[in-house]
Image (cartoon, rainbow, N blue to C red):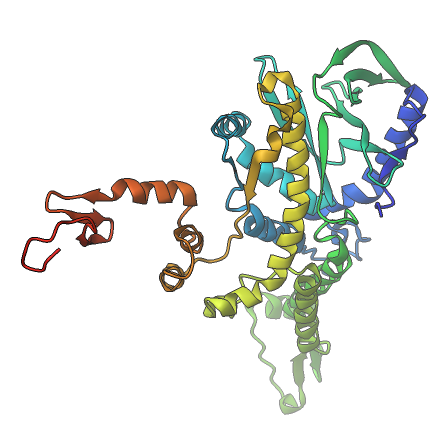
Length: 452
């Protein structure tokens, strides 16, 4: 079931200027009511700064703790801090993938796209042929682009729309279908331009990447808790100002303005007279709610990490564990990562399927099926533990499976090739590899003394 803010169109409909204006207006409404709020949260613009100002004589400290950014960047580093390894057993396909990804700086693109998914619940990738005749890949957020699907259960992309403003503030855009790209201007009404380009891809040249089926951002459900946290910690700071500027109460002595100014400036009081022992001088203070505030702050903080399912890795107790205990603490993040991995894989399948369909790529249309993806969670590495596990697998699993356990091995197949090249036979018939002399060749001839 699609999210309620997914745009659909029937098979017999074609988007004209009026229909396109309607879709853009719907997306603009999402930008103003939802996406802008999510962007503001990530960039530290919280509701605490928009609350009515207090009276001038009251402390009015405004503090915002940006949990949205912390949760997003922490999860993004865990999910894609180690770049996705894209490869193929087909040498020609593998070489083209490496060239394409390097040409487009795809590791950085993937990381930014994954961050956009966590911010807004969705992100987009657009494909084009650049002025050098190479295929280009760029990412977009839903504040500037959207996809229109058909009404079938398969949700086939029908149109991709992108808008932007020029230096004069005039809005322009493009709309792509399965064959071509048309351009338009929005200045007193939407108007298509005369030019239309054939894009060369076998389908709408864009892909939507979703964080989850509901297209919900990673921190979207905790914004109200974050606002409450900001309000409590701001009031706590106000209380510090209240105590710093507490009123001094003096009973039993009449002070003139000069006396008051002297006490304020020099912080000295000296009262004489027979009734001096009856004079009371003390500060007025309101009841302290420090314990209540601290308990509430702790509760709100725990709830934010609990609901977002992202671990607070800066907690003082977090780093005390290692190995399997640490992985248990990161289990919820790992579960989120698995969901995102499936969604990201779906987007990348569409990416390479479209790119390979364009003759510019020089690939066969079905070559995208040969591509393999390897995601690596950015767990804290314990190399000693990993090497022990790999060693214990000797004789039980293949060498390839053993090497996959060790996080410092970036490419298992390349590592196996290196091991193979390092192996050599010395002149005395001993096989030598990176572990040292293993023993004589099995084919060695018996020397007559029972030694082979």
